[in-house]
Structures are given as C-alpha cells and as structure tokens.
Image 1 (cartoon, helix red, strand yellow):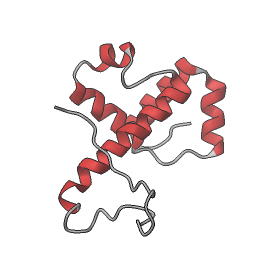
Image 2 (tube, helix red, strand yellow):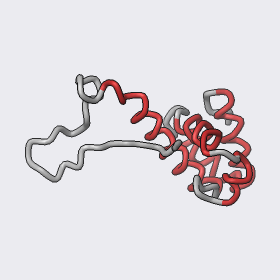
Image 3 (cartoon, helix red, strand yellow):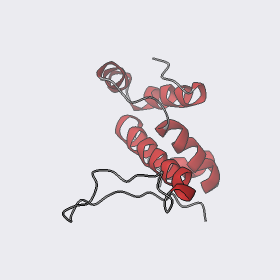
Image 4 (cartoon, one colour):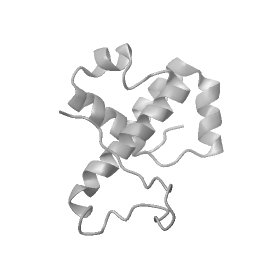
Length: 114
C-alpha cells in the first residue's frame, strides 16, 4: 500500500533500550522498511520546515502522483546528510520556493548543494 512504516522505542517502561536494535533477528528482516520510513518522515520535516511542502499536501500529490514516487522523493531528501547551522540558515534565507529547488537539487546529488 506504499505506506511509510517506522518504529521507535517509546521509553515509557523501565528497562527499555534507548534505541531499537534493528540488527536483532526479529527486526532485521524489516530493517530497510523501517529506515526508509524514517527517511520519509525526515524528508517531510525538512520540506515542511523550509519549503512549505508537505507529504500530504496538494503540491506533493500533483508533483509526484503516486505514493511510490512521493515516497522515493521524500526518502531521498531524508537520506541527505544531517543539517548543520550553515545549511539551515541558507535555506531560511533563500525562502520557501528557492529552498524547495535547493532541496530537490540536493536530493538528486545525494548531498547538500548550497
């Protein structure tokens, strides 16, 4: 159904680990599914914050059509190296429309192009 799936330790019970170990036998078969879901969420957060471009927004729907294409795009953005202050400042200063272009170009390169 192309729905992003992610997991996380809720840490609401004493003794739970700080992070889930995706290499354990029970989780390892789903590791890439969970990581891809996390990348989609990170991509959604970055695009929403700097480009006013939401995963569930009309723009994303019209731009990418299928959920498969939308997921691939948002995951590629989420796979970019973590933001540092310099990149965040540059995206803020560029404004939403230019930031969207920067983020798209960066996702194609697999690295920030600022």
